[in-house]
Each structure stands twice: as C-alpha cells, then as structure tokens.
Length: 335
Figure 1 (tube, one colour):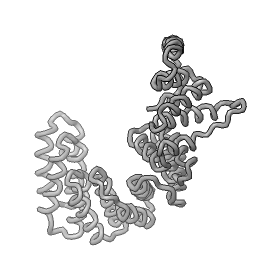
Figure 2 (cartoon, helix red, strand yellow):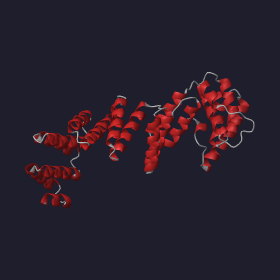
Figure 3 (cartoon, helix red, strand yellow):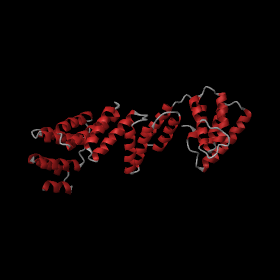
Figure 4 (tube, helix red, strand yellow):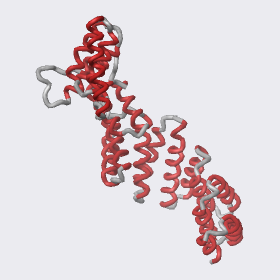
C-alpha cells in the first residue's frame, strides 16, 4: 500500500534494482529538480532498501511541491514510523501521527484497515493497524483481543485462545467492528455450551443474538447461536424453549444441517405424535449433505432409541442402498 509501511525488501536482486533506481533518479533531479514524482520515487526507493532516514527529505520535498496531495504525508508518516522503530533516531523526531492527520486520516480509518486484515486472516498485520489507531487515540482493546484469540485458535493453542476470549468478554470495550463483537459473544457462548455450562452459555448466546448487526453474511452464525441456545435448553430439559430456539435456527438459515436434525429430534421428544414433522426435518438435513454417512447413522440411532421401528427400518433400507459398501452402516442396520 505504502512503501515504508511494508517491510524492506529482503531479496538481493530487489536491493540491486533499488540502488540502481536511486542513481537514475538522482541524475534526473540534476536536470529537473522540481519533478514531484521523481522525489516521491526516490523516497520509495530508500524505503525499499530499509533506509527511512534517507527517504524523509525526498518526501518532504514532494510535499512542498504537491502540498494538496495527501500521498506525501502518508508516505512520510510511514517513513517516520519505520524510523521510530530503529534503535536510534540520531536527533530526528519522528512524528507519524502528525503526518497521517495532515493526510486527512483518522483513527477510525486505520481501525477499518485493521478490520479488513482480520477478515482476510492477516492477524499480525491487523494488530499493526490497530496499534496505529490506538496511537491516534482510539480504544480498540476488544478488536485487538479478538484478533489475538483468532490467532491463538488458528495456531491450535486452545488454552490461550480461551483466555483471550474470556478477557475481552469480561472487559467488553474497544470494539472497532460490530460484527467482531457479535462473533466474540457467539463464540464465547458456543465455548461455554461445549463445556456444558448451560446457564452462562445461554446468557452469552442471548447477548450475541441481541448484538446481531444485520449483515447477511453473518446469518449462518446467528442461526448457530440459536442452535446452541436450543441445545442448551434441551440439556436443561426445557423442551418447549428448545423447540422454539431450534425452529428459529432453521428459519434463519435453511441450510443449517444440524439445526434441522436437532429441531426434528426435539420436536419428537416434546411431542411423540410429531413423527412426520420430525421425518421432514431429517429429510431436509439429508438433502443438504447427502454424502455424509454420519448423518444417516445419527438418524438411525435416534429412531432406534425412540422405539420407532418402522422409521428405523426405512432409514436403514435407504442407507444400505446408498452406502452398500460402508461396513459401519451395514453393521448398524444389521443389529
């Protein structure tokens, strides 16, 4: 995006090319010292070499020649930032924030870039942009904590992921993105459900549902929040509430396979006369993922547990036709 914002080039050929470019650019300035673009390119070449100090004067000259172009202030701001990260600035007082403000940038602008980096899965880069937003006066503690949680989770470090998520839920402040806050509360509720802490899971999931920001791409997560909420109520034996929450789960997202399965099961447990309704929900689940034998096995087990022999036999016949070579299915239906 901006040359000094990126890490210096590590490739030897890139260094050779940048050195060569600097020579040509300096020669060009001997003939035409008032060329704004040449000064801009010279500053960028120095940044490629990891020499932000040398980039400062070309950028300052570009700003003098093009005072109304924010690009110069942005580039200079990142040069100052790169310089401030070095052990010694040798008398130069880096002031990146001043330059970014001169370019018309705000803390919110930087936090939005951080949000975008999170959505792209570039968590380390997101934290850098959030730090800039903080330096400009914005509290982004929640977004930083959520990014750390995602980073730990991706690394498979579940204890640290849980601690990070719990901390941001306890503090619940400094959110740059309403979707991230919604997702954090949803994931916390899901985690508590998996730990069988149903009362606290319900509170967290209801909080997540209340925070739903209305984005269509988050509907699957909203549906899952209702699914886990319904499952928690089922775990507590409150089948009437479980039925309603699971109904909402599949109403919000008709592609929620396990939502249909659980809704069908709870419907039957709440009223054993609803065999046909349960069957219809199971069919919807099967049609969504027809190539998953685990789903068939789950449904066959349910019908056997419920004592619905005819339905168990029907499902076994269909499963055996579809999964003739699957020994687990054959064994299950042969019992």
